[in-house]
Length: 146
Image (cartoon, rainbow, N blue to C red; front, top):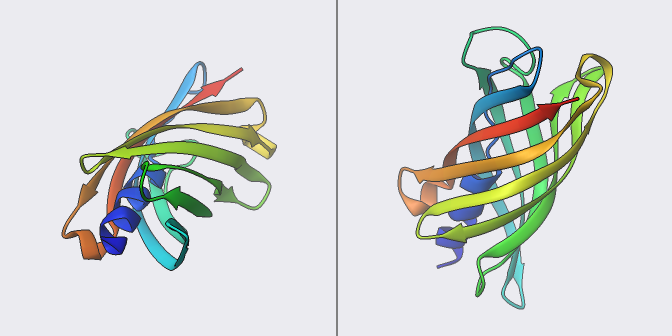
């Protein structure tokens, strides 16, 4: 049960990769979740992944992503902190997530720096892949560019 919820969370946290210079940045990502502990029905852990831009270049193409999460196992609701990119060009912020039936949806609340300045959050959707104990997910995420 613990691994099942952890894998569901990991999927939800996945961040994707595809970008548009004007409007939205859409990315796909593969994520790996590492559940570190469960206390009073709340799972805590870290996650990491890589993002891919559908065009094969541009913002967040082949960018690293990492963060932390908290997921209440009984409700399937959680939150966490994530960073996409490296160096001066990053998106940083929090996220909310709801995990149901092996899928996850949520919202990223981020601020961009460097070439990603003016980028804000947006929705994401994830699906878990492999066996629950693998704790892997595939996500599509959209960020708004102001």
